[in-house]
Image (tube, rainbow, N blue to C red; front, side, top):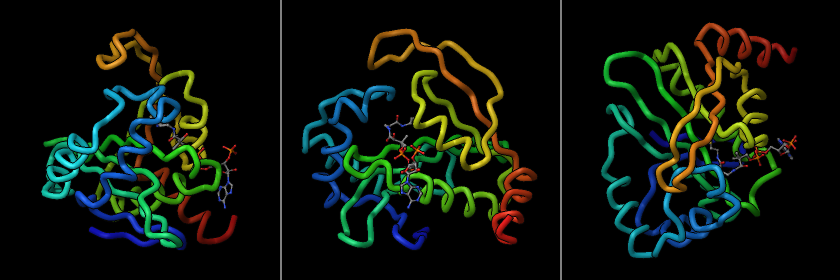
Length: 185
Ligand SMILES: CC(C)(COP(=O)(O)OP(=O)(O)OC[C@H]1O[C@@H](n2cnc3c(N)ncnc32)[C@H](O)[C@@H]1OP(=O)(O)O)[C@@H](O)C(=O)NCCC(=O)NCCS
């Protein structure tokens, strides 16, 4: 399940990643549009990472890939994949530590995960982000996702109603864009 890109290694989390994980998960800027509780204690992070280290990337449910930066061996963030039980559809989420943003790491990581998912027969990748989360929307559109709508949801951790943009990337579009990428168009 490990994937290498020029600058990154996408791999399973281990409890040893807890310090890096806590650093970005507890940053209010990174958590701003996420529905998770923070700050996260080191103990809770280790518990969470122990459960992630045992989860199956091919099984229904969420599987988070750690984004390791090869240059320093540290975890900069994650790409999480939510597989559905019966349909060939998966939802993606992603987060990057603040000091790792603006260097193309998230795009490189999400692209690698998408490539593996589509090579494995996925029909459609989907994603959602808060309407105010411009960086996230930019990343998705850069990779070929198109907006399919908007919906209001209740963010439990933040106890507020938020409007979410919905995105979709069907395999046909991914393959067409991939062909263009390969031919350098
Ligand atoms: C969403 C998130 C991962 C996007 O991070 P990001 O740094 O904008 O994305 P990337 O790492 O792909 O970097 C792309 C940016 O780096 C720039 N860049 C610099 N060097 C680059 C390089 N070598 N290659 C590619 N892009 C590069 C790009 O131009 C782009 O900037 P722009 O959007 O201003 O044009 C980040 O904002 C985040 O973690 N937010 C908090 C968590 C969150 O909200 N997640 C989404 C929930 S749906």
